[in-house]
Picture 1 (cartoon, rainbow, N blue to C red):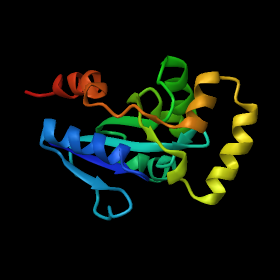
Picture 2 (cartoon, rainbow, N blue to C red):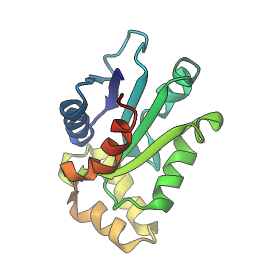
Picture 3 (tube, helix red, strand yellow):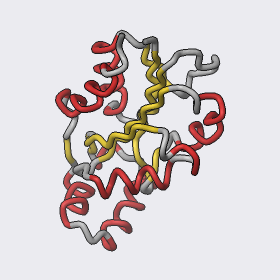
Length: 166
């Protein structure tokens, strides 16, 4: 099966995952900010970091869904929080077009977050948001940072990708 990895990365976590997937599959990894050609591949893997509870790539997915909906689509989110089923459902609901949710394989992956890498405005937003965050671990990650980028986080997704090989 031929495929492509399209990603949006701010501080490198999503790009790192995209590069590892590329190494494992042989698919090209392309930054969505630079992507301009139509997607012709059979499998499309889309990776995006999370901002304000949804994929930054949600606009691209919505705009291009009609062009990729007949393909095998895999989406992965990268955020500072420890992924679980509840979080995966939240990101799917806030980031995918209505008709896409049942057609997409969605994986939530933990990324890297360093407060000092954020711009002034985002640090201010974090200061505000952390006061209202009910999840103590997430609030701690927002203040102290986290590095959960690990190649083994991709194992389940890669098994799924490989299930389509001939």
